[in-house]
Length: 142
Image (cartoon, rainbow, N blue to C red; front, side, top):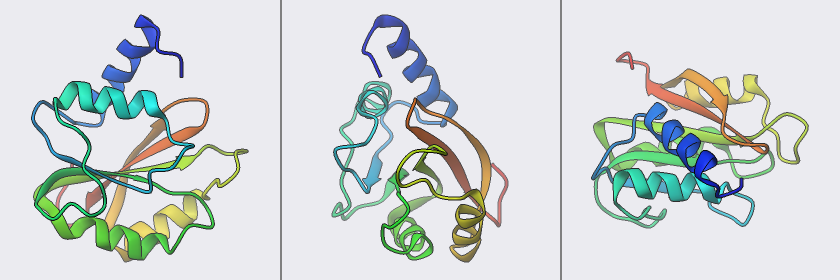
């Protein structure tokens, strides 16, 4: 994504849609060279915090997970992701859009989420390459 003023405003609006706010600690899984750096920058701008990596060892307020078809098992990853989340935290799953290399079928997202005790609350486009799916705990509504 371009870093023009308009796209930065769009990214900030997207971060707000994800429910991320100031001072939240957001843990990132699956970072690689193909991720949406504009979204990452917007998250850090809104939260005022750097993203923490997979090895972070303290409680977090949210997690973003970049996942591509062919990565390790999604259900196992989603269970691991939840291990350090605060009780009210959410998981945002980012997958390549349809037609992109690494696209994950929606039914596979739903199945893996269900096995991990989560359910999709909403799905929307992040940029030309990525789609975000918000995942919530089955025991509570988001």
